[in-house]
Each structure stands twice: as C-alpha cells, then as structure tokens.
Amino acid sequence: QVQLVESGGDSVEAGGSLILSCAASGYTYSSYCMAWFRQAPGKGREGVARISSAGRRTYYADSVKGRFTISRDNVGNILYLQMNSLKPEDTAMYYCAADLYACTWSLLRRSNFGYWGQGTQVTVSS
Image (cartoon, rainbow, N blue to C red; front, side, top):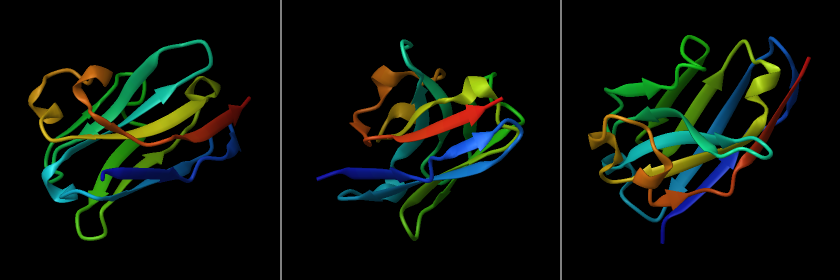
C-alpha cells in the first residue's frame, strides 16, 4: 500500500534553513503528482508547494515563493522541501501528499490528494 514518511522537521531560529524529506513506497512514485502541505495549530491544512510527476512543473503558495523549493528524486523515491529564510509563521506540521491526478488542477488543494504522510514538525522561533 502507499506509504509516505516525512522527516527533517526541527526547531530553528528565524532566518534559518531546513530540508524536509518524504520517503515514498508502495506505488509507482514517478507517475504521481507530489506536494507539501502544512497545518499550524488551530488552522486548516494549507498547500505549500506541488511538483509534477517528472519534476518539470512546480507550484508554490505565495507565502513561500522565493524561500522554499520543492524537488523530487524519481530514482530513490524521495520528495524534498528546501526551506530557507524561515519565519515564525512557517511553524506548522508539514505533510507530504501524493495523487495521480492532482497536478491537473490549477490550484493546490487538500481535497485533490488521496495519500498522506503522518507529518513532521517544524518550529521557527523569533
């Protein structure tokens, strides 16, 4: 079955950097659209970034454009999120998500993704 396991979350100071990873298994990873979402306490789950199956097309939420970079390794079946210039408002649980068709939609929405990991916590202090 589809399994997504995130790692790399940590506590950092504002202005710092982190790299999140998501190890995928149980399906044809290279065929799937992948994304990162995040959820802060008391808030809904919001889309952060999305990448097409071959990695040619990416999409970023306005709040992270220019600071975060999504990438994927279709040999090792790993999804990455490079996060630079972190801000306290980036504090959240970060989730990776997979879906065969999600990249066909113009917007990055939670409802477009069928498979989810358990999340990794990122805390940014000021």
